[in-house]
Image: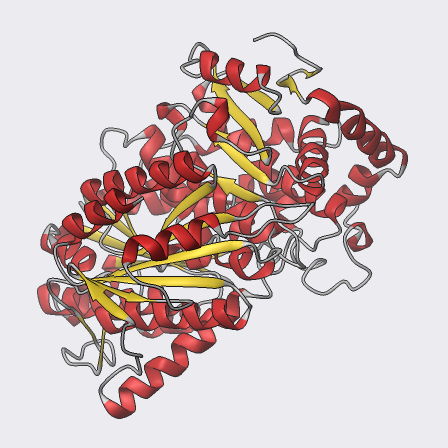
Length: 566
């Protein structure tokens, strides 16, 4: 591409008239010695108050410190192979599962190692489908949660441990489970009581979304046969104060977001596309708060320049020799959109990008005046969901308002009165607010069973909205997105429109009250709906605009109807 305005080795691009402001900001960053202060663990880079900063900087040392854990992890992998396990199921949410999923989807499984599946959906159809395909005597379960209290993960554990008890008996059940958690967590104690095969205690000074290069990422990576030494070596090559590309990327992201280009559109070729989901959580949960935010947009097909507003920053990660986006990015650059390319020397070097982006995000937070290590708004939805579950346990039903109207099998819960459905959509999408500093966006929140057909229709709906209204549109499955973009949804400038998509499941799955009990008062279907309703309440209380569509008919047909109305 032409019109390159900066070249920082692996990082280059065109920022147009914003180049001077980015360079000036980076000069100030250098003069103040911010990068060196980060490496010296100076919390004042971000805030005067050290809380949730001084105890969240362990990721800086992960590439070096995790080398000492390699023998322990290798012994564990050998034991798993010796026992004949050919499948591993990781039970986790957000930072506890996303890096593992990236490793599996991008690098595959090496011969002689168990396959890895990740369960991060409480949709009962998804839980039932995964259960149906398992051969329990040959399956290992990885229970992964930093806090040891994540409700989805612990519900998965109770459900699967109970099934394993039935299949292999109490004497051998614990051999099918391993935990990854923080020292002193509830899960550590429970794992000891249930005689788990192994408990990996992670560095407690590492936050969940910064944990890719710790036990949370490396244990599942090693299980599928990946080379831990190589992963850590690529990260260590970047994890040094001498490397300035991460810092420059962070200043660039932060400065452009403060100048209205706060939609970070990640352009990833198919070979590394799964990396986007990990980046989405890191950026959204770290930088979406205090009335500011960077909205990561992943998985969006590129469109002609006229389909976009002036609020985008396009960042392409380009493995050596692969470049399917040259022409569309050149057109966007020519139209004046900032376009940045990050070159990878090889696919294996992607493991180093975990560290580069963690550092870039920390630097962006410092530049924006944001604390990048806490998540102050995440608890809001959890608290409301817990209250709703408590009501259900006492009354046998969730407190749910009646829909405002129903049209062709779709029940509609409105933020304001309007009818028919096409008029509702036109008013909402054309009325999304904007300010001098930021424009709005649409978040599709799909509390639906994740599958290829639903993915395809959600992508069609997203592109239809973007192309007609020139809006950034994100897509997330619930409750998974609550652990990634949920913080940004409630902590940013409040210009988003949130479209909840819910549906009745074909089946439901009981969550045991206790391990070993085949009965329970709560089901995964009730938990998922409580989480959807709780998040809706939290969004409304934060002043956000929310519309809910409950798809009473066939989910695919209802989505097609919505697409046709745009």
